[in-house]
Length: 187
Image (cartoon, rainbow, N blue to C red; front, side, top):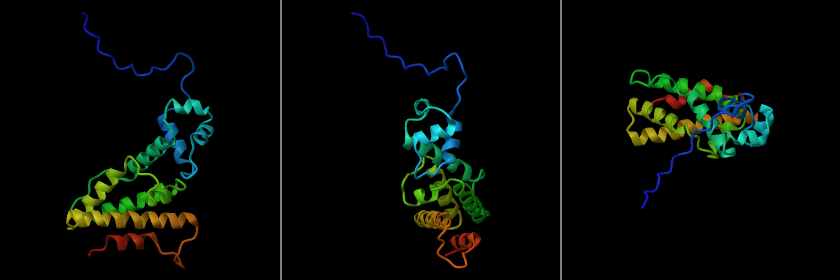
């Protein structure tokens, strides 16, 4: 009796001969980040890229994957390239806070979506880990540092959502640096 032949994984798709691809994952992510995250659809991204929606589905499985890719890219952009240290953990967190504000303001609806838990991005864990590490380096026990992460994230995302809505609750509006200063003050 003959041994069954093991199933081989299908080979990765190679480009078909002919015209070069008009889109790639990086262009798809860039287009997704240009659109309002609340109304982000595969059709809207396809229109933005000037391709058929069916072409987009060759690269991305659907709206949830688009949101994952957008969130992961934003996380990559905001986390400082260096690790926080005991000497500079506050500076690291301030740098992160300003990067969050800069990058999220450029993506309509992302801050409110992240604030309300509408989508947990793939890169979220790296941001959370960095913030918890920074607060731990600042002297907080890990459980308390984790709680500070929630306060830090909620305050910044809430600020950005209010700022984006145009209905900021303070008059005159509070300065972002004042918020960061309060968030980084000791116990």
